[in-house]
Image (cartoon, rainbow, N blue to C red; front, side):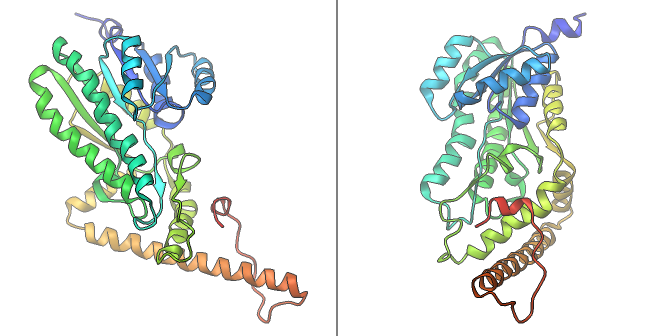
Length: 325
């Protein structure tokens, strides 16, 4: 009987989006588990930090620069590393803003990274897997692809497409012994919803009918969602467990919030969930409007040197103000 190490040592694992979050932690845990890890990232400037994180964790991995939106980059990396046993499509980006305020170029950039990039990588590695009659493709999607995500429509749509793609090619590749798994995490404290999140070009356009709602959504994210989000460690550990499974499930919904939202949908309470999110968003919009009014009042007081007729205490400072205008 094969030992665990004999079983996992031959597997070569290619991961995308390893500069932070799920990708970085998955690379570390997979390397610690004995897999041959090729950790990739798009930005060469972050390569040193990735190598240092691996070193501090006592993990050994090969780091490659890979732009998932560039077919030439994909082919060059595959030519250098050879056959891939496991592909983990993790790279993703997010552009916040209403669907009217996200430009075509911004939406296309989201789709190129979140959907067409994973598709291109799957197409590049699948022929070798088919020839060897074994292989595993893990697509990291999102709860947003299952339930939608207001003010992130392009992101939600691209993840919904990735889930549909996973379900489709799972049946196509099954006769050849190639497994396809979709991982659908809820909110987690990764850089995609913090430093790597991008506000749309027209996010603060006061002529937009969504101006107040964009700001309210950002307030809700910073005050309510991100502070309560789970850490990314559990998702990375689950991905590594999936790599070692003989018969993984077709998809995994990860995170308490994601499981709760999916349970509500199964119970026919999806409309109630949307109503609840909308109610919280409206409160956040009102809070942000009050904050802006108070700022204007304080500016008038500073300019005139006289106190306002009905002075109010200043709004509490939050992380969201770093991104606000």
